[in-house]
Image 1 (cartoon, one colour):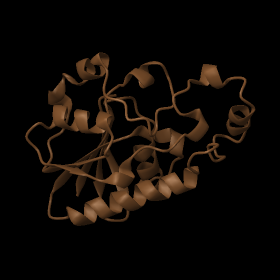
Image 2 (cartoon, helix red, strand yellow):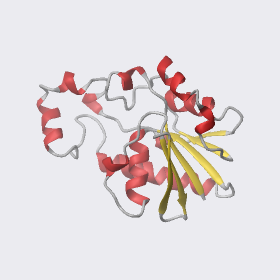
Image 3 (cartoon, one colour):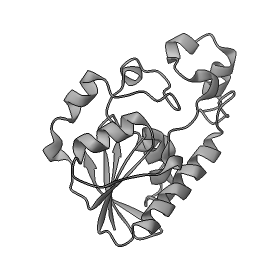
Image 4 (cartoon, helix red, strand yellow):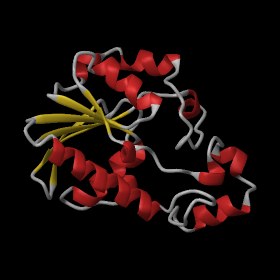
Length: 189
């Protein structure tokens, strides 16, 4: 199956480099403007989407005539005490510094453990693919962390989580055989 993994368009928090996980921000004006080159987005049969406003708005903008299916567990990670703050604002926070020193692997204080988030994202990805297995091509409009989780777990050859970071409105077209992802091309580099 061909799958497009597309990160939502830019939000105000993204513009300010804030940790925006469970904060339900809409796209900002720049986010809509960046998506206007919609002919660059690959076609699909159906759209799978996170429940967050920024993903739903992006999906409706890119695929206005396609059915959109919401999957709750495709939402972004809960950044806990870091939610809504920028790295600059957190620079003196001892929990933030400890998290950075860990290689960004410690749980977010009051938030979600990275391993729990990755498992949740990948389990929901597999569920959505199984429920739409009659489609030839699916587009997932989700979050950067969700894409990184899916690619880290399923992509061959193996790479690290942060190796699959994508900018807003960008992503990957992949071929998924039910177990392994093979990268076909990048979407909007």
